[in-house]
Length: 196
Ligand SMILES: [Cu+2]
Image (tube, rainbow, N blue to C red; front, side):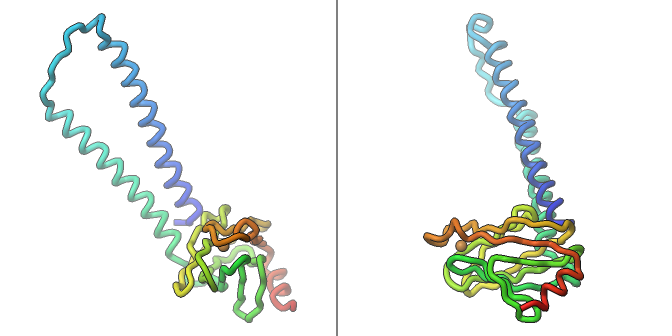
């Protein structure tokens, strides 16, 4: 599944169930306060157990939690399964900027330019401390750790400019560790790539 759709689906699914539960539990609580108030039920009833009820409140939440896991797992697979034809770009976090290295060894700082309509694989690492590579628009958030190579990918579907941030506190300049993702038409990308 497309990572953006997958992550959004997992988010809304979990949020939706949480809202339904919140409303349901609140309504039942208020109803119980009104229906079982002392003036109507002066003597409390001592209920020992109810097998059916116990089975329901064990099985139902288990099933709900499992479906949440399944939706989350699908979105995770979408984030990790990179299309074979992806364009590979190396990304390194360093105090305090993002370095991008292209297939022809072109290097940029805080600017990632990619062609529209391509899948882009980012090979992420760090040159010093912990950083975390974050593109909110493409739902990517991956820790950059020195000595550990990892990756992320996204499908550059819409031309435009998007924010890239560091989302792991990495020192005094952390807040300035901002970069831009620029998605441009393929021809523009190719000519940009050849520029010094
Ligand atoms: Cu950082």
